[in-house]
Image (cartoon, rainbow over all chains, first blue to last red; front, top):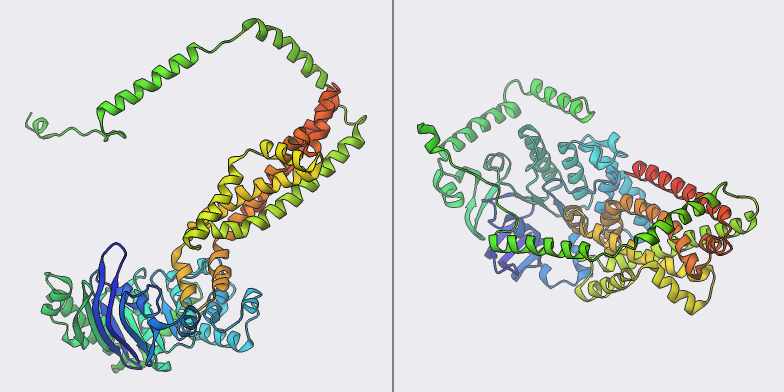
Length: 289
Length: 267
């Protein structure tokens, strides 16, 4: 379980990105963090693994205070937190396999990693994960040869091979088309369920957040202004998070698409639809489309 | 008629905003250039004497004589190639830690300043000046040349490495750091892949420069083909000198072409 208490981040420029955040993410919960640009979403998840140093407050992962850790202890805790990035952040000149295995760097010594002699169990796990996301044949391709959706899948594998307890996901769909975005969000949520992971997903697409997350937290100017179920996002709440705008259209759309989605998953012609989706997927993955 | 009254004029904003400053600067440059060219002394009788001398000089180059001084040329070439390769390898090896320290996004401030200082010193002296100093310290011969070129390589390669590291994509670096990688693992997985192709290309480029410079440092006593060339000029064996020059041109062209090829292939 992740517990954040009175977290404050003040940048050297004087900007207070986070103004005393209190937040609890129980095990196995997928939580979406929404809010306008500059609300502090990225800062918040980067404070959790201290890619950004918090100014004050406490961050507890299973009662271990992350802020008090030395650099070497911090490395050990970072292994337990997988991170998925906007724009994928794969090392472009490394192969897919090397990118996935880089998720194990916290577990192996320098020379083993330098000569790419990772333990067999790591390599098995890497292949298992790549197969799970449909990219096993791509393992020796360079990361910059892949499409956006494929890259993000590799990014997901890199995070999961760490065997994390918590996923920190920063705008996973920001540079993907709407269909791929949904596939990626669905994949992340499925994997979280399979592995009983909790996740914090930064996302600026309200629709996607509502479709996939169990809980939504709205951030505005470094403060939490909404914390509740996806259904509770009324026009008033959205106005509070993002400011004045005509939200009716967005919310109506969400409901329609939710229904559509339910029809896909649980409707009478479920099987036919299910068959269709994987086939399309395989085409995509083998580079046919 | 009504439309013309609505149209507004637009001009590209000038590079220097203040009109006064703009005109003063322009005028100052013009006056200086007029004075500089006006006071240039050209002794036309000397130029007239120099032209036939140049013609005789060029005539002395032909035909180039590869044969009579061939053993000396071969010795010089061997020394030059030895000097080039050893100094490139040693220079690059030493410049890697210095380059890492001189990258702002890697090193803490004191280390950064120290390494930048080393680079600045090694870059502020031209090869010939370092060579003269080294010859005074360690005597004539290729060892002085080797040291000179090594120092010059550190300045060149370290600075470019540091700048290349500062230009990397920080997202890729952040992602590897987030996995719990140690500093050296992070260097190996996140930094090295991003800078390696360019650095290999620059290494070959430096090899090429070092060969050309080895001819220069020879002239001030640093050994190598430059020493042979200098001797040939001193003895007025212009045909042998021409042969040496042709060989230098040939080798530089070969290295240049092959390094360009390798660089394209590395990307």
